[in-house]
Length: 402
Ligand SMILES: Cc1ncc(COP(=O)(O)O)c(C=O)c1O
Image 1: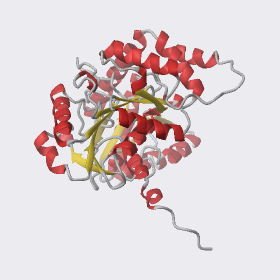
Image 2 (image 1 turned 90 degrees about the vertical axis):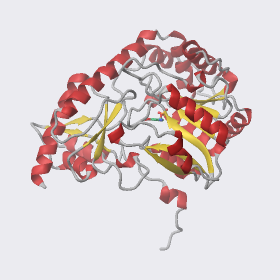
Image 3 (image 1 turned 60 degrees about the horizontal axis):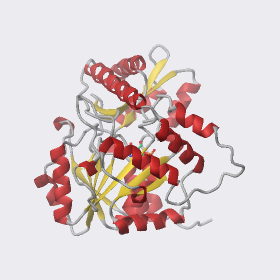
């Protein structure tokens, strides 16, 4: 029987490179192997008590829709919290609560671009941007960054040739997933100037904002460009408060039309989850600053352990990321995807193996990053160290086999 073809959009939306190997990992665990999961950014840091108490205290008879813009309580709590930390003076009306940063990014793409328009990204970056671009019909144009230069951002002179008549925005993930690159203030100022002069939007994904190390200060871009209407900040509670499953993010902008348009899209999807918003608002009102400090210090120490453990594996090339909770490592293997599958299907070191994410899916450029993996700092220090030791054994076994 002939069935209709699917849309271009459906065919162009790739599977998540991070989730692709998950089935093999489950099978390995089913065979009784201990699988060290360094593949996905699902933190193991406990979610705040204040959030869980907020969920437990929900006693309404009906779980009703929230307002499309988000719960007023959460909008007020979130704006109060970011203003206290960064002094940007954002009002609840300038924010829109979304289903995670993911939905805020889709809204931003749809509001800034028509199908066929272009957004410049720093390559490699968060793989799901590719999915968001396929959904919205936007073309992502990669600005190359390289491991040899610790993934530093390109200069303005290097960026300008990529701007075309279709370019509508620059998208910066700061700190970046998967490289951990943190933009300097000078780089942020350069981007702010660039978008002003070239009449573009600047979308900044600040999902990992607080996770910066080595004495760097967390930055919200609005500190450097107060009330700049060209800037759209995307934010999330997922990583900062270990609340990935709560699905709470937001979009912030001083641009009235952008906000209105995003709000109309938000009305079409009705609302973000009600109970999570209630609990998130309670949490932001009551949480002690030590929660975030403890999470930050934990990720920094895991980074130190991971970087040191990687440096002990012969032939592995890596660096110390200054932010986020991932690091890329180039392995002495031809193809990181087949290596990662090997680790889950054929390898076993004293009853254990390590699950890593092949990094090619984080690169927009074809055939780049083929030998590279991403490691997430989602296991405690001892487990991270052990997982990377097992990874080293796996590399040896893979090389001997080939
Ligand atoms: C850079 C970046 N942006 C956005 C997201 C999605 O976040 P959320 O859970 O808020 O949708 C992630 C999740 O890993 C991410 O790494």
